[in-house]
Length: 194
Image 1: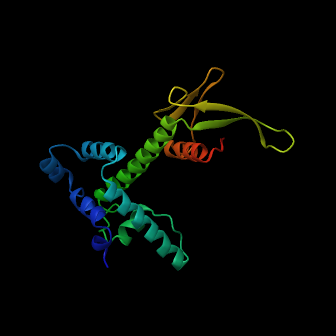
Image 2 (image 1 turned 180 degrees about the vertical axis):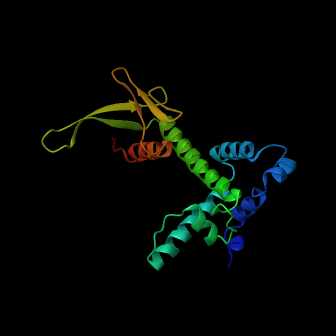
Image 3 (image 1 turned 90 degrees about the horizontal axis):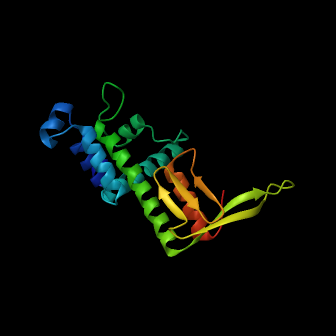
């Protein structure tokens, strides 16, 4: 089974978005970057789920195949392009549509995490944030608690928390999505964040 049968939405998206710059402007009426921003926003809002799901499945299949061979399993662009049967361009990368599909997947997952976090906040789930740790064993010993959309707000690259005593921001060194995933786990399981 080839990639177009296994990942139909992904391969169709890549084919439609792998035009050269002149063809792209002729077909879509604007530059590829403008289309990428439109697609990222649509994915964040929940559209293009089929492309995101196919990309996630393709990356998982690539990783499993590489591990079976005893090789590194991180899906670098060139290796994923070869795995999907895409042509490798002179610059050693797959066609531009692959990059755009990868960004669509990232934004879809970020949007999903943001929607789930907002749902938990709106439901009134508690968020407990570690305020202090014991000097003896480093275990959490004091917490700040936040509840509801008045006290927990997802704003851009961080989560703003504020109650009558404490105000702060929760963020991650890695990404907004990582911060939101930690927030979701803490609120869904009633465990501490931090």
